[in-house]
Image (cartoon, rainbow, N blue to C red; front, top):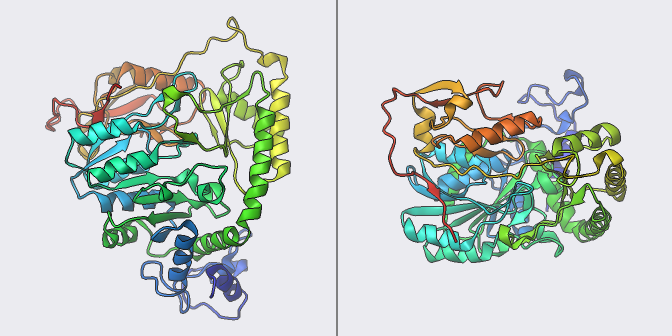
Length: 493
């Protein structure tokens, strides 16, 4: 059986001359820089078509499905973003109603806009000290579905960016009892299936569609993802239709070959690779647990409703130091040449994967140990007064599509309190909106946004790049704002 990546390598070394796209003509001298243009081709004879796969691409996707033990897998070269857009569009009719966790990636909200969906939210539990979102309660899902029989699908993020895993098996059973599908954005969990050290994948727990970003935690190139169809609850024809809409008609063979090579590598050598990886990871976590100022976070607080956690995410708390997350990330970058995945107000995330080396783990541990020993970091109540994080839960008064398309006006952040936002604001990464179009802005939201900016965190989404104003619904708009909350579901237990 031909492997796409091998065939592409061989073709790149052949004497075929390209009187076709792309314009660099596989000529390294035609581009500035060192790029593998010899393998960058278009849909030519023998290389199949992603939007109508019949041979080598069809086999490559079938190989992925066998490896993940699902009904069908689709290559997504527009990352998990394109997969999320397609999954939501296929599962919920235009103008329909979807239930989502409020800590979903911005792509979920973009799907709601594109399909003019009514959205109901369930807020996750949270850790007020660190500001980390916890899990989604199955009981909350069930109550919301009981109260909203028109909901057509449920979408959750598990694991979260911080590695928090919800009880997917129970939630899947609940959604199926209401005859609707469960979509799980498991973008950060593509590695779950390959080692018992990690949580069980949603693909094994009853989810109907599972989305994996291969490039996040497996050896695959940026922008590569898989959409897994695990049941018949979402129409396959619709999935194919929307994947064709949300992905380019000229998919990169370099990216597709990267996915194929990743699957082959894991299939052939994954057992050894994951054994070495998890051994190195656990050794590093044991060293990092000894910190006094910079502390390894072990999510497990029952109040956060943490069902399970992905230990590949090394979360280092700065709460007991004189630093904030951004400052710790800067020291790691400047003093030790270590780039951290994410910096938050009170912690940083070091994302690890099967591609990490023992030397890399040792560098991280040594750096954190050295920083932790500095006298300037020693915490005291007098030296450091850190405000506990409080999530700004907002009322949704309009559909996202109505708000984004309505007449708007610009006002300062302070003047926006009480108004309805018509644009997003989010910290990136992870890209979870602090405010969604259609939601009513509160004083706590503005307070949080200002605190993030003061700490140097990166606020995105606002059209004003200075982050001093926000677009809100115009006072003279003719849009009718319903009196009843459109989408917020806040159920006290």
